[in-house]
Length: 209
Image (cartoon, rainbow, N blue to C red):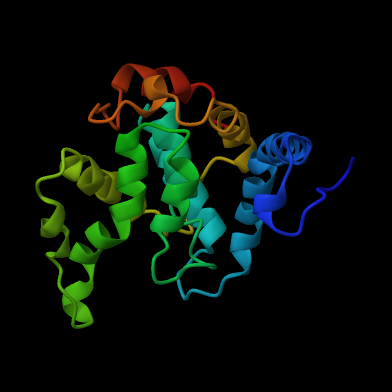
């Protein structure tokens, strides 16, 4: 059996849905490969910045890695702009939706809202509200998102910065997307982990490419 028997979902049999569940699991296992392909496509976007979006993603993740951040933060940093070419007016929401079943809530929340937090740097120059982030002041992750933007995101448009290659982050990405989706021990709503760890950062210094 390679396809279902029905043309309307309400007509489906157990055998039909057993097939769909099996294929869904097989497709889900390929998410990491599709994300890696999307990252490679990001260098085709013409944005006007001094570096392309792929390098920006790698620089953001590299800064997280060199700060001693944990795996959830690093992959969130790597993917935070993954939606730019598909959802340019809500880009943070798309990668956040991809990440949400697999990383700590703290990290997916910051990815979802980072574009609003970034406006503090430029909105006053284009007629926007630089204090738009204040709408989220009561979130437990407000300070984390502000730090995410300041430490890693807004400064990662530098052609002179030596970012790590994608191969540095691929094993972490595969680990994250190999987790059981929506595992409460992973999502940990309300839990906060620091963006930096000096001991881990020092340990990683000798592993730089």
